[in-house]
Image (cartoon, rainbow, N blue to C red; front, side):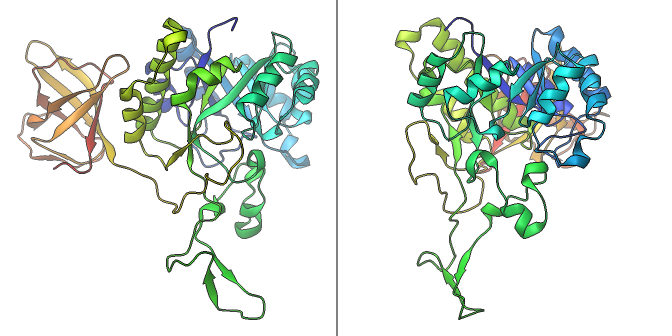
Length: 409
């Protein structure tokens, strides 16, 4: 390993970009106004990209913009102008999957770094070498690769060809995400950014000669979820991923919440820092997994890293959401011991909440003496993004997140 690996986080909005950076991400990836596979995320305007790039660069971090659709003729109209605009905004790289975008970028912005998207399903070293020779700096590996395959790919490539791989987040039932089910069933093209996640619907079997008779695929009155994947979680095996030659550890989730971004980034950042301090004796710390179990997730799995199997199917489409973010600290008066909170979900006076902050272990406080900012006493903060104050002897910091178990009153 010649250089320090990076934690790469999703940025579905400007607020989430800043959260990712604040909680330790070395780089973020986001979607601009064109050609990215998250058409329904809060994609960035040029002005927001500029602000996000400045925020990241001021803190020594990097910003990558996704352009990873498979474009039709109409999609590439204005492509040259868009790429030049991204270069002028100072983005550090674009993430692409189609040769048309690579060729155009090399023509109009030859200094702009190019990363090959996982959508290009690169599963062998010769393909990686081909793309690298075409001017691609980094290969985002297909999710179908095992650790042994990644090691071999790394051993066959020049040192300046970086490898990136997903380590956490939603997995797709289709090969490298190249799916036609959504398009067929809903008319929304997954390969052009409009996936309806039709694979996560509940399905029954219908026999051709018996229309209208619905049979469960397994003997269960509630049906089955035969294509619904679990979530990827490789924090327990972070050492193996890094030592296989992966430089960039990628977290999925541009459609997820700021709380998800904060909790996942914090855990992987701390795990990576711990590994770099003492690689030989690195072990999993329970607190990292605790944070990952609190954010919204499906059952966790290791994907294809340890070989292909059928354990990825999740038996329902629901997320596990045991914790909610209820507020974010905006200010703290150390003399009066009063914190001002911006509400995120309904919370009551006296509730016990956990503090999640970028550095340091989580700890618990009680929401005592809740008041509106005009000083009026309140028993509940139930208006979206309202500001309220609490008395708190423990010093809180701006951007601390207040999270609460749904099982607590």
